[in-house]
Image 1 (cartoon, helix red, strand yellow):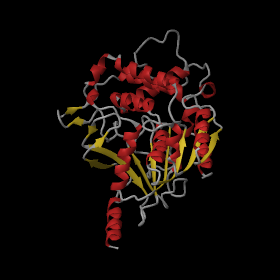
Image 2 (image 1 turned 90 degrees about the vertical axis):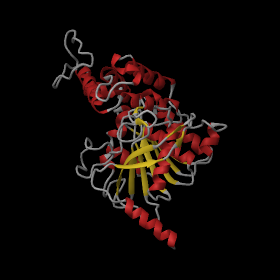
Image 3 (image 1 turned 45 degrees about the vertical axis):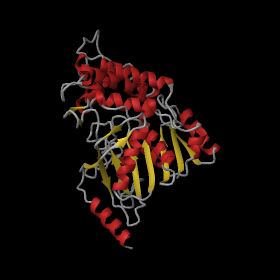
Image 4 (image 1 turned 30 degrees about the vertical axis):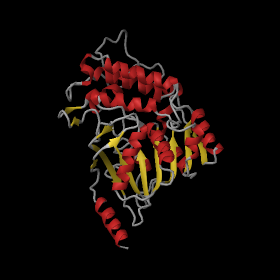
Length: 382
């Protein structure tokens, strides 16, 4: 009884949070999958709702490549631009904050408050830069596990995420099978394809070819903006589909205020609207994201293989005890729906409780950040 009382008091204390406040959790060290250790480690996170007395109503939301902990904005709850999964989180929504304690943490390697390449190396008092160790999806999940223990969570009602967030959700199901009741893997697979790795490597090379990269030792605010912009432009193509690009842009000339090209190059006979869109997206990311974090997190995406460290894929998936839902997207170019369906079938073959649902969307990989009604309906099949 005393232990239970202490637990409840600790959980209640940690739920004190003002709207949109980013909280910080720091722990001593993290042993890394590819060798070595990182420490001290800080995770920036946000929470919405309240943890119950038994510590079993928590939901962990995991973010994608350039995301952050800001998955929900209570001050502007209906605006999808205010927070990246805003339409899904809040009172009465699928991730109902009147019932659940919803958590989202910026991944290690990130640049939105968690320890990453732009953080100070305690040994040198300078940013890590490329001296930051290689991190993996499994390392991200291990760090999140430390966070939920710190918050007093005894069992997760669900882990859910899309893209790299979907890889994290899958890893949660395999690494901590007794801790998670339900897992939603959205637009993600057991391992990315050679094509996806190729696109990511071209993006990384564009960053490292920028003279301002300086082997990763650039000063804050003076990084390789051109290279990062081009990397984002390439990534945005993989997030779309031919169908969505024709719907949105076709061969139309520029329709809105002209954005600055990352190289300040001449337009060579005018500008297409799709080019202007890519310039804008590249510029916006270069203003808010760290180039070295892009290198490390995109590489973690490439390196992920859920079967690593196990005798086979079947052995890894056989560990799963959670109810699983796998959500594919018909037009996804980066994580094809066939790959997501194949993974769901594999989980079923080894005795897992898995269901596959497909979003009928023209919006490509980005549909998990756009098709709110379809995604809500898919998740409700749990």
